[in-house]
Length: 308
Image (tube, rainbow, N blue to C red; front, top):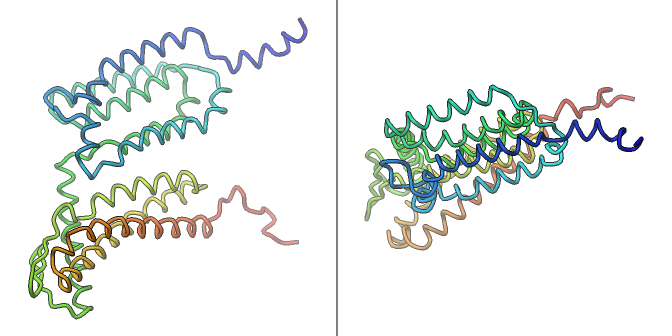
């Protein structure tokens, strides 16, 4: 009797109410019935599902990695989560209602990204409703991380891609000029003595920009110790991706001038893409470690200032 009474308060504090699992199951069934078609079959009037987008759009082929990574982030927190009581908050119902409003607006308005985003909002609302604020705080990053798997709407994508195409063409032109390669540029098309090279949307660097930014978020999660460190690591991944892609376009132009378009756009072009992304990742990692080293976490700093 004495042993049971002493363990009671601790067990009760970390226990999840039995009814919470019933509500959790109902919430999952409702979410699955509403949102599963978006993932597998596409939304109403939109035949391309999210999974199909990852399969057939090279810009988002990394999308398959996002859900497993999010689950890993949850698994890392599982020991802390097991000790938290499920103190559901009624505010979760408001978030759930918001999710269905976003879903309805996107479905009726034909804005495909909104129904997809509403699934993530619904997940966040379910966590808040069933687990409460402490569970939501622990799981906020894994849930928000899921937004990185959503394709950017084309109307926004085109506004980003074309300036990137022009920038890559300008940098490549200046680089080739420094290498004494005769080149003339009109917009995103470079004219070489025996050929011409168009910096198309596929060469804008958007694919590597999205992939490297996502990689930067993961890198910042594992190695960043403060919000400043994490923010800077993610921020530097953007110019690194843009500049490395511009260098890739310049190398392609040089190969086209020296060896012809067949070499510049064939197997070596694909190999060059992998090599340049590896270079971009290396630059981001080196810069990230430098940021962590130069901007130490004040919580771990020596309060005595290192003096005797």
